[in-house]
Length: 244
Image 1 (cartoon, rainbow, N blue to C red):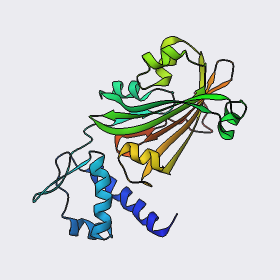
Image 2: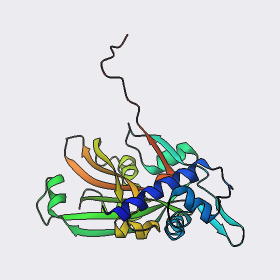
Image 3: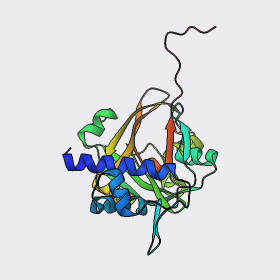
């Protein structure tokens, strides 16, 4: 990572904290004052603010200033159980819907074949979609799984955003567990375009591998979350403490 990008990433993190700490309707300090407070130029600050404007978190009013407008609620959930965004949002009282989505038939690349115990070139299905809350992009999800895992008519007629919910509703295949890696990443070009953010903006990535009841890997998932819309946590036991 270059020093310039590192500085910009830090600015995004600092500006996100300012936005999250401010109640809805709060007017931000003037650009000169905010740029001085954050230790950046006004041009760099404007670039970062455009990202948050596109996410629906800030609104500029000509002659009046820039105001915090959202999100009014976030999805606050633990990571101990595998659940869809739709299920998490419902529990949090939020409405989420699927935005632009694409279903593609692709050949297994080496990394996908290895994870799914398939051969290079085997037929896979890739589903990419944007998840919206209050009309603004909040997440970008990708699932890659073997063709034939889900009935084609079921997939095209009943899929509404969550592959997990679709499999649970149909009962096929029977699911057992998911192994998930969590990391902060710079948004790739296709993801940044879908989420209306700057390429290289920081996102939270959950990269999962889903297994059926026989221990066979059946789905690779990439879930990119905009930090401002999600508050994720893990409940952890204390190591070395014996139960009473």
